[in-house]
Image 1: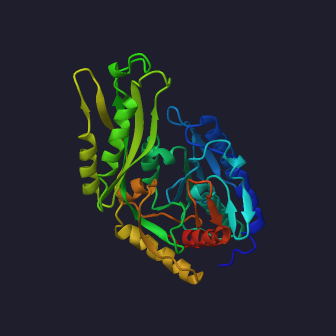
Image 2 (image 1 turned 90 degrees about the vertical axis):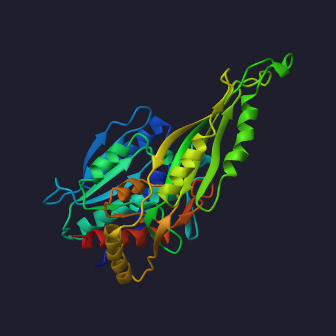
Image 3 (image 1 turned 120 degrees about the vertical axis):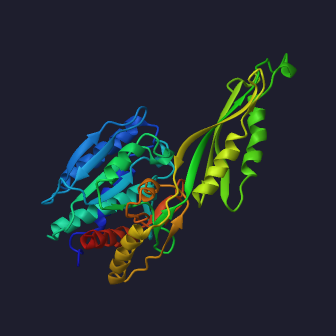
Length: 376
């Protein structure tokens, strides 16, 4: 199947630029909703029916869409992606959208606007080529994946359960690989409680929450072993330098290849809670948990079909389980045929070096188009 006439590189890159330059950090509701509006307008222009779903409290909206098909109302193939990023508004000043040789840079371009845009353009290319699809194609675009999908998990699982196949255009693995399983992940809220005092006149009367937190960080991270990792990524405390801090908060992340290892890690983290009669001390609260996704036969059969398409396209397509959670954790854990890492190749994810390999825009769109055509 040749889609050369309908997958035009310069046009795709220009469309992706619009998406990347619409910055959309998770906690900025207005920014995320601007991105959802842009994506909605593009989907409508692509011929899709679009439904905007009001977002969870404190978060942006989501989109559901379906492309024309004789059985459009039925389940079939779900392209599942997120449009929120970790980069705050203003990152474009230091990480502008730009092409440099075989790379293209920009906030969120690899995780995961590049793969999402390529996947949608693959659907359009199939339509323009007059390809009769056996299954209808649906789309779910969510707003909070970068914080563990606390507000959209129910939506994700409800929508995914309607479909035969779940395709997730998160960034590709090294070597042009895809993902057939993901590790289990838990997030924790860390709370250090101190006693206030005047830092100049009565320093000894206080108990610093910041110092309490600082003492706990190496204790937490030293629990890391081959089975389960622990890292502290957020710390916030204090307001006045002349006050002994009363409160300090943080966030920690734990990841394990097996659910039992993560469950033990959660127990170890929660056991760190220790406060005295005055409330001074340390507290750990469990946040969002992504279940382990281990590749079952349904997912491996889906991968086998993708591999056959890749062979026709003369591209390698290795597969593996991966760290770094995605919404594929949820659908994979439900036993639904899920193939993740179908997005573009790139690197520097979540940094000021985030980029994609520009050739992968067309290559991955062709892979997605071939796979969607092959699925029954």
